[in-house]
Image 1 (cartoon, rainbow, N blue to C red):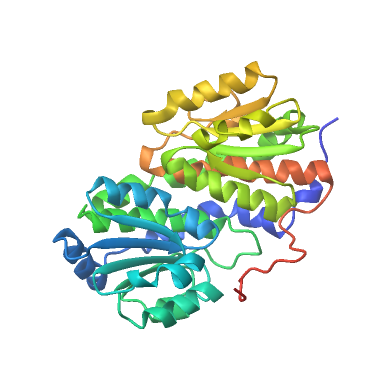
Image 2 (image 1 turned 180 degrees about the vertical axis):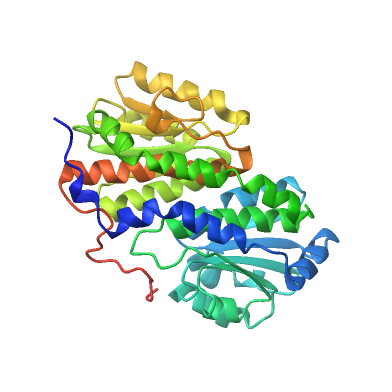
Length: 349
């Protein structure tokens, strides 16, 4: 008998299905501003000693690909949670640092404190979904996402932030915006095609999740965005405990937990470390653990990613995790994404 998935079809579910529209609307308005161009020129001339990337939750994890892109371009880059930045790293708030701050609301408690601590000392680029937010108003340059209103758990805003950060990274690395937009376009049909088959995806996941007690998400490099955000949204949307960490960190201890009640979602990621991740998959299976590989050549339809350029992998990697949240919610008979204690905007430190 087919699974009854009616329990999952709430507001969070509708947000998931509207992600292609949100990505299209965001891509349509991504344009180079004179303010951003001026900052990019200063960066290319090595006028900044460091670039500090900051955010909280999924906004923080979304910065991982940009960290790698700017580091590869030869810049000194620091990735730090805003909560740590404002209390322990305030020395970085000076004219020689460039701050890139990501916040969907632009008005979380930590972002408000960052703006107060900075007092316009360090130039700041904001990536936000809220045009009239304090973060947008007090930044030197702003990139707006167009995800629209979001019910609870970050989904539309997360993928749109990744899209905007890919655009930002290319701007800071002096890549023409016309080239960037052309490279970003394939994400729209990829997202549409994958999400259109949501029911088939969720149903195919259910047998493999029956009886699990531990859930890990692991990967390397740019995939750490999906690893961190994936574990976060599983906990938020289903109240099921999940941990996200690098594939190497998983071997340093948590591997001892491998067994029939442990499920590990492994992101194959880029070619640089793909074979290492595939070896981890084999080792888990050899020790009676349950694991699946998220990859463009995965043998499982739900874990098989759409064919997109490598720069877009972090965006499509989150889709199987979103299907996982629906499957877990279905197993537990609860509506996913319905907050019990949390709120959409965290207003208290």
